[in-house]
Length: 204
Image 1 (cartoon, rainbow, N blue to C red):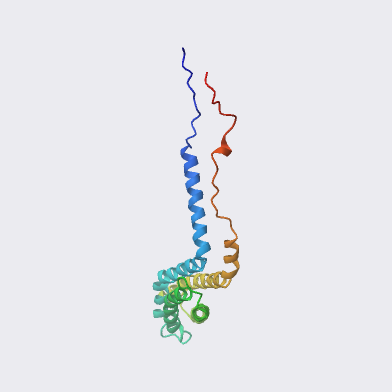
Image 2 (cartoon, helix red, strand yellow):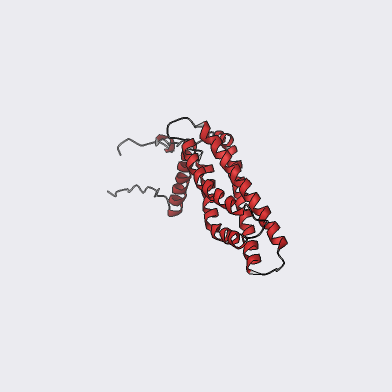
């Protein structure tokens, strides 16, 4: 009597399918984390802003040093100092504004906004005064002129990042609600729902 072998299809997913499923699950977990802590988004933007300023601080400080004796740059040094200090302190204040398992601290939220505004004001004063110094220089192409001009685009970049930080921070309640509406539930498929046809339980 010949034996009839029941050949079943191989349901093992391919490597591409496994990678796509793992990527989808990773994205789902990130969204779940943002649902719990949506303040991670403005914090990330602020950290990038601070890191950027620390990277360009050498060029900015070099310009301040060259223009120290110019009459147009009386406040550039103190402005750079205040910006450096606030760029670190506003990160600490932001962390205190959203303590774990507690309601947001309104005082620190307002303080973060004030610190961002303070940095913007200092950057603008620096840029305006340094620009006046550059325009007043008689020797174009001198080491002082080159150093002062080189730092100006970096300051503009910091102003743009600070403005972006302020917008993302101010809109936190808006997009936090939108993120919480995203469906991140996991749908489990029943084995009986995937069965096609009937099961033969009769003996030959």
